[in-house]
Amino acid sequence: MKKEQAILAAFMTLEFTGEIWFWRGPAPWYFVTVPDEQCLELKAASRLVTYGWGMIPVTLHIGNTKCKTSLFPKNGKYLVPIKADLRKAEQLKEGEIIVLQLEVAV
Image 1 (cartoon, one colour):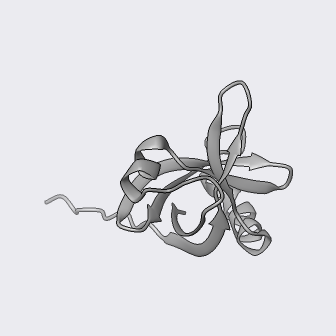
Image 2 (cartoon, helix red, strand yellow):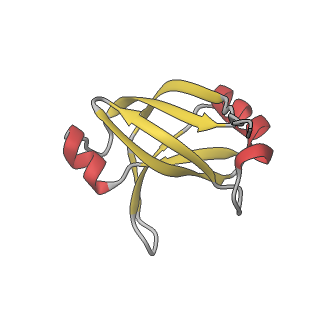
């Protein structure tokens, strides 16, 4: 008789507010910068979850929309990319202050 094994995943959930800003680089994108306090928590968990270049996979919740994305490390902080389909679904614009919830599987 085989024993079934369950894999338990722990989740770290962070909620914060931030302003949507536009980066006009070679590949323009919209971001929200994670506040310092939450960056410290993410940095502590990063060694368990990063998949390269310090990227951290997360489930992002904004309003009624949920999506998978990855946080970008930048100058000791993390940036949350706000994809076009998410901006459209939630009618978000540059400069808007929004509430974000990040779920990180650790």
